[in-house]
Length: 240
Image (cartoon, rainbow, N blue to C red):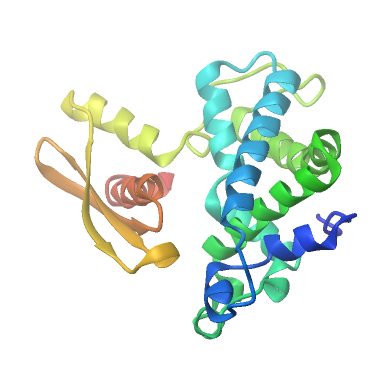
C-alpha cells in the first residue's frame, strides 16, 4: 500500500525522527531524541485526518467522525504503517531496546512514524505533509467506511446504521452496560510498570462493582480500551 518514505531536503531532520531516547542516552554526542518531533507529528496527523474526514464525508455525524478518526490513528494501525514503510530497520535504538525487539515493537514504530511526519512538516511544509498523509489514509478511511457503515458504493454518502466493528470497544461496552444494567462502566488504572517510554498501565473496567475486563498498554486510554475489548470478548465473543 505504501511505497516509500517522504523525501527530505534536510536529512538531519529525518535522522532525528529515527532517534529513540535509548540511543541518545547511550551516545553522549547525540543532543536530542525524536520525542518533540513525535509530539508535532501527532498534532499534524490529527489535524489533517480531521480535515479530511470533515471534507469528504459531509453526511457523517460528529460521533461517527470521532470513531473513524480513532480507528485511523490507533497505535496498532500506525505501528503497522511504520513497519510497512521500513522504519523498524532504520530506527536508531539503544542496544537494550534493539535486543528487546524494539524494531518490531508497535509502540516504537508508532512513535517513529509520528516523528517522521513531524520532521517532514518542518522540512517541506503543511501542503506536502498533507498530501503524503492523504495518500496513505484516504484509502484506509474509505475501506473502513464502506466495510463498517454500509455506504452506497455509487455516491459514498448514504450512511447506514454503524456496525459494531466501526464503534470502538469502550462505546460498545458502554452500550451493553446501559442496556443490561442501566449503568455506565467505570475504568480504573490498577497497576503501572516499567519506566520512561516503556511504562505500561493496567486498567480494569467494572459495572456496578463487578469486574468485566482487564487490559494493559503503554497509554492509559489505550489500556482502558484493551480492558473494554476483554470485557466484550467475555460477554459477547462473536462481536469482537
